[in-house]
Length: 331
Image 1 (cartoon, rainbow, N blue to C red):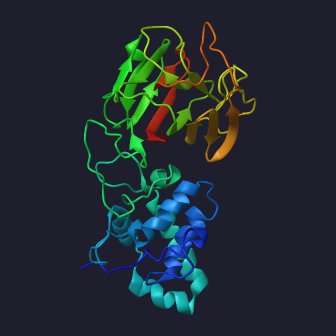
Image 2 (image 1 turned 45 degrees about the vertical axis):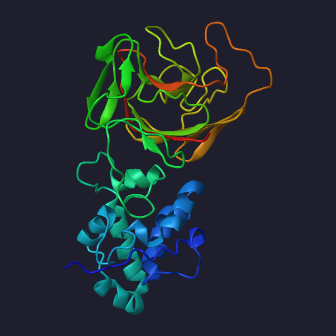
Image 3 (image 1 turned 135 degrees about the vertical axis):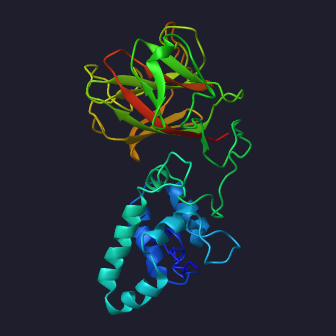
């Protein structure tokens, strides 16, 4: 029988009331110091605060039963019988060991899933499931009925829900990622017939040196060419184009690279009314308000409307990886 170690003591600094409802608050405080205290994602802070002990446990279940994240922590050695006395006799050592276990758990993942627990946390998700500690029902057809939750757009295994226009060979699925390299091509999300207007989009992106790509929003499928409709969020850290990652291409440009090649970064695109916000790893790089009466361009519209998402394969010398693509409607 597994021992309940109660990482559920999620006092979590400002995220949860100081009156801890949990057995050993220091476990939760360590989670808070590592993941919540420095986070700029207010939605994630609120989610952790709502989940409380369900960060690791399952709502209304015996506390000796954990969700997948709790199981991973237990398997790595987070044990109530060990750390409860150590927190009294040598608190600094105990806190350091707990933090080390949390860091090791970042590399673990639930069997059958593509994202590690660390990647889920980085994306603003609870690592063990929903706020009740339960796992969402998997399905090939995506439902957006619950606008309060992020929904994955890419299953990590296939291009289901996506449609390539020209040069299909420029796209493949590899190790849970959508990978582009080849002649100009765009892959459009077609998994939901309702267009996206106000939304919060996230994707993890990794570029190889001198690579160029893009993430389109408020766009629509076209058979060939550079997408005419909507906006492009630039993907480019070291390619020759001076317009860099997280620019709204030719609308609000960023001149300095915000991340590094060969390393994953999280791109966020938030559209609400006339406001577009682009973030990299939680840092806001673009905060753009569309002027009243803005007219669509002839070659590229670049005005707020509604539509779908698309990813760009720019050229044969550019290789870019995308994973953990998800969206939350804000309508």
